[in-house]
Image 1 (cartoon, rainbow, N blue to C red):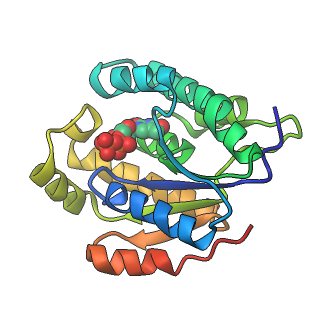
Image 2: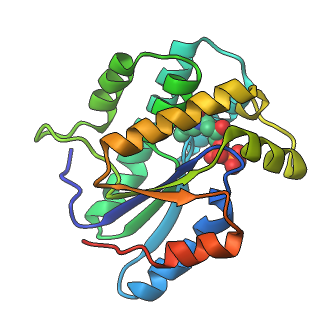
Length: 212
Ligand code: TYD
């Protein structure tokens, strides 16, 4: 596995309905304007490759055992890293991913109750590099808001997928797991108060410093 050091890797995270999708394309343009000599690309998880998109369809529609779900999330992630993220990083690109491994800790871990030990094992297996380090985003932008607010926003805009049908307690556990991840990795996490207006959130995103 390559060391993937030359590019810059940004992930967007948060509850369904937190508003990350509203901002991700604009953020790509912002990065492109700020770093005109670098390619900036947006990708997503689960997905980002032809196989990953097939797995996404299964993951978002089919009921399945929790371990199966976690293994498929990480299988899609492995393919995404090998086919997309590492080659892009090696080519010096800025990669923006709509979700990455923190989502597994939040949804499969916090939400559905998979142990952190199992998630750590999967993370080591899938994101581990030859030098013993893990591939992690350089920056993770977490759109944080109460489960209740996220639910009311979702119900106004779309039909729910498998995860979006979960109850409020599920989303509260997901939120708390995200916040635990953010506290434990404060060097790469940037917290956004997603209860604010779209305009206020965007103004905040524009202030984020990118340090290569
Ligand atoms: P999302 O990326 O938010 O797509 P959309 O905006 O089209 O709904 O949704 C993907 C869903 O997959 C979301 O509910 C969170 C879930 N998910 C996990 O449970 N674990 C993971 O590791 C990832 C990446 C996503």
